[in-house]
Amino acid sequence: MILAVGNIKGGVGKTMLAVNIAVALAQRGRDVLLIDGDDQASASTFARIRSDLEVSKLTTVQLHGAAIRQQMKQLSAKYDEIIIDVGGRDTGSLRAALTVAGAILVPFQPRSVDLWAGEQIAALVQEAREVNEGLKGYALLNVADAQGRDNEDATAALSALDGLEPLSTSVVRRKAFPNAFSAGLSVLEFSPKDAKACGEILSIVNALYTRGI
Ligand SMILES: Nc1ncnc2c1ncn2[C@@H]1O[C@H](COP(=O)(O)OP(=O)(O)OP(=O)(O)O)[C@@H](O)[C@H]1O
Ligand SMILES: [Mg+2]
Image (cartoon, rainbow, N blue to C red):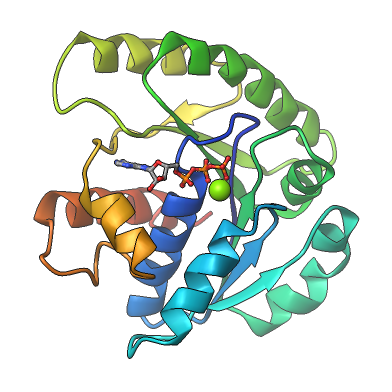
């Protein structure tokens, strides 16, 4: 019900995934709130562009630091699903989100330098479990190559992280993601439709929500 999409590493696709998952859930008839917990406010910019289009509305609020924790009780009573996009550093917002979330989805890019940050975020997730016992942590490979060794190496490295479970789906580098995002749309709504991009988002949503986070 409360999903954080976060990593201490920037530019790994947190916002792109957060908005696509939010739209996918809205399309399933869920009442979704997207919380923009990042100072750069790119999820809010997305929502603003979107608000001029004839597509389903995506309710978005900006909340930072302790406010994420303080307002969650009230907000979670109002919405079926909450998705929190939390910034690319070890911020108060990320820590606050980890105390209230049912799960965190941590995107990684398949380059070893990004995986170093993996140990730090995995440690933060473990630490958060001291106060939020049921917190689940999922690692996801994003901006993966369509094929090749790097993906396998990265998947193996993600499997070795204590505290994060790797999702079996990964997301390949596809133009549809930035193209849809800059138009204020999910890949599920964007035309021309990229069936593979849509399939990747839907299998992430299935993996996360059929387990009942
Ligand atoms: N699978 C993908 N294929 C192609 N481009 C992608 C993919 N995932 C993300 N991108 C692009 O990579 C860039 C970074 O993604 P995004 O802004 O979602 O990352 P972020 O982790 O939220 O970054 P920040 O830390 O700055 O908030 C964006 O231009 C986005 O459109
Ligand atoms: Mg972002």
